[in-house]
Length: 371
Figure 1: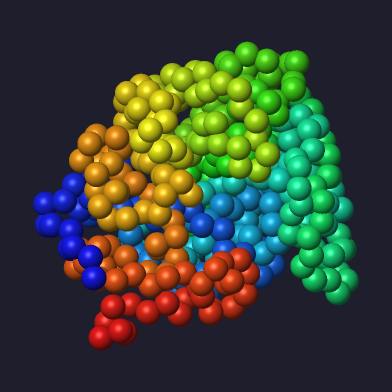
Figure 2: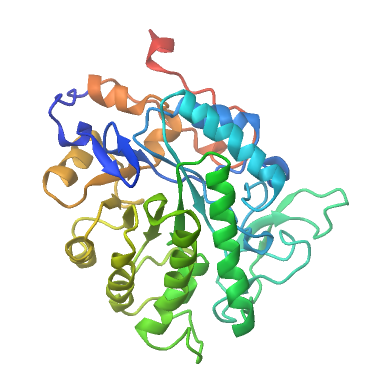
């Protein structure tokens, strides 16, 4: 048992985010779980999210806005009629539980493989191959018998200048599908080494056109995507996630000036929030907090396990308006109740994080089950 959170804990204070009135400030971080057979959201995923509806706001797993944006097998997309119907089922279940849902749009860029993309070469800001390997299919042909395997990354193809407007439009189309399906909004994944981050990062972006070189040019793609989505669904239904100086997925950043430029460009749009991956001891966390005029959400990533005391402290100290929590939500669908009552937390099963069936996904016990 831990000490219960007091009723006046800043973590339990309500918060307005965009059009939503959230009951508290412990939000559920986006978590890739690879349970979408055929890349379409299914009933098991609806159950998973519905179980966690007591989160102040659920950010869905990263979901590709276009077929070419898919990172891994069995990740849901947001670009087809079937996928829209799947997200509609999830949104209904979350709303039935009095919860709120933002669908995260994640174009993976170079963090993919031809076998995931039916033989196509992944695209990126520049033709720079990531180090390492990725889980993908054993064959690029979806009509053959194939299984999951691990293969080395390939060198991506740099997006041509004439292609970029179609990619931007793909984000806006996905945002419209998500909202029309019943989601409360969408989050743009500009973090963790995926496509938007590949444009922001000076060590990856080698372009010499208007999308490369200066900080303003490297921020241009993210700004255009945000503007297109805001025009499509409303800025108060849109947020963006960034992770300055985060080397995940082979990102190389020698400076974080681009994030000051990005925040300056996004601030007038009136987005629902800025979601930053970092820790309180990183200079950019407080710098961007000061520069951002709206709701500021912080995720401490894998630097530290998210305890109730630490998360409440971040809000009490003014470091953030809300926090996103990942691993604790995996194993504790009633996490906030456990934090309120000082109850012990279930431990996540590391072997079932990615792929599989309901085991390690929808079968974690609630407190009333334990009782």
